[in-house]
Amino acid sequence: MNKAFKTANTILYCKNWQQTVAFYKDRLGLAVNFANDWFVEFCLAGGARLSIADQSRASVKSCGGAGITLALEVEEIEAVRAHMHESGLGPTDIRDHPWGARVFYFYDPEGHRIEIWQQKP
Image 1 (spheres, rainbow, N blue to C red):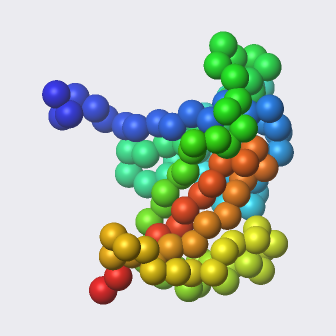
Image 2: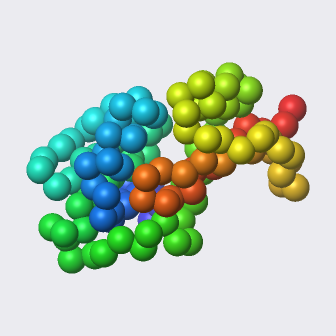
């Protein structure tokens, strides 16, 4: 069955829709794949997408970031963290994770935790 899936899209329903869209577009630099006046879909990598929906226009409401972590793998974690720090995004320090990776975290305006990770050599 998994060969039937062409893309994967995570949709975050947000109270602070405009702020959250600006965060992913302007601060993280994600490319917009689709946009209208209440829904924006960003491209991540390959067939992965991340969408931001305005909860006031949707049947699903915001979870306020509770229980959500967006985990994004990178190749050069030090450089990415330095850029996030210089951009004022407040990343945590890089630390070793028990499953063999190095990680740091920061949060979007809606409170969703974003994990940046790199596999240890």
